[in-house]
Image (cartoon, rainbow, N blue to C red; front, side, top):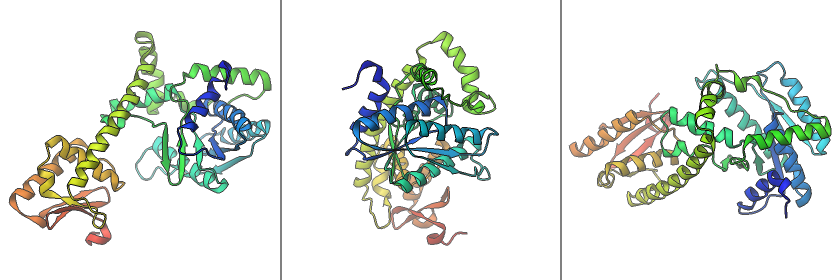
Length: 340
């Protein structure tokens, strides 16, 4: 089907083959850097072979002086590939305390979802590769993430009604750079370079500039091994989710109150108590608590049942309260609980 020189295109083909149905319209997130640009080139080739409608999607963050030039460069690439290109300017809000990197990421995904929905593309390709995945595993490990976090970036994830697909998570960046240089030599179009990628005042930039060179020297294959670890962690997470889901059903979880039976929860082992609590919070789209906060919540749930004080529990978590009502652990929003 594909020749050896089409390895990057083949990765896209295999990723799309895992979906329940093949898309007829496809989006590609393109920043103008080598990774996303070559993804656009490969996706363009794939779209031609399979009669897909392809759209390039570019987010203008306004964080760099060269941002306008990057936008022009992406549109030039789209013109060269003869595919439509859509851009959206966003304002990165750092007032929420997330930090610049996280806030920019949230704004970027929101804009990509909006553009994909506007053009009717249910799937959007992202250019994350082996180096990105290995760095994500390492950063999450350093931040104390558990099995779910160490699974790093999934190959397919959903935001709103859009599927985001990462076909190149196991592709060495050297192969992408070789393709980018070859494309530049053949067409005259050249990718842009984001200076923040290597500025060590940013967390990922610090990893690339300080830690990665030392790891490359001592353990040259560390990225491949970390990516393999991410795949194994993702499999472990699936099994744990299955166990937690079964436990939650056994705890008489109900759709009407989104709560569960406290007495049944206490019959579980401590490890499964913690597991099902995390799974339950995830179902409510709530952030995961720290280990200390989770331990405190579990302690209060155990003591509460032992003492029989149903309504004594009021644990604040994010924007909600975790409470116990008539022997069931439930979540109260500000509106339902009457709290400010």
